[in-house]
Length: 358
Image (tube, rainbow, N blue to C red; front, side):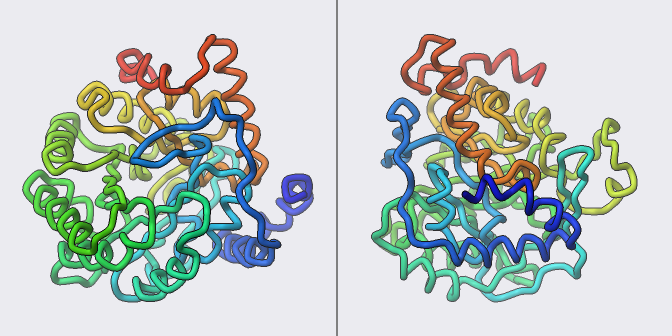
């Protein structure tokens, strides 16, 4: 029903400021009647992080920052949902307007700046849903004005890890000054050590994930992969938004807005970074592919590049919630054509090629 209505609703939503339209979407989702996740074809199931994901298509962080509607989102067919980003203390983020649709490019630029209601509010909402079906994770960061960002990540982990299936350490948002500096080897090593320590001290079994940028030099990627392996990171999320502006963008006026670029133009660089990461870690650390997933073909390419799971967000702005079902159906068709009965047999199959050409 929601998918059928989207072609009618989209023109109305796109007449509004992008953030206002998003807020209305969250309110609408909150009004949906309670319903569990739909049943998926068992061939789409993925065993990862000590969990069984019913399908590999997840919702990326940023859509439901405050964990307001994770169960409604799961009911749309996502195999998992990542809420957040969350920081310890409430912060408003950057001034509005701070999100822009590049419609001709099927892209979005945002400079939210990790606007968050704070960890206490989000923990309260996640505590209410604990025990329900469906895999839910949380993306964490540091307050903009923090004097101890490592402590911020530890505090978020301690509060949220007992309430979710995974915690994603976000050191790659381009919209918080200095945050990407935490991808440096020394900082990252201590950050991951303290995050794992906070998870363990809380008695939680949530997996610890690390989300990285697509703009990283390959020697820096070498260091990130080595540090992640040493510190027992259980998956890498590749990648966040990009600060680059491809010359191919058609919306050149909007392209001058500062912030992270997501959507279709991110597919190439994010998939190359994903494949490069796979070449470095092999099957020792699972990968989650993000960036430009707007079709079954894009999701299939991410899997071939090394992703065991994929995530999307920006494509929903243009394609609507029915995209989730179309991707799942398309993946099954791709599996039939490839003669495989498990996605695991395809993961990383073409990483070497896609590291050069994606």
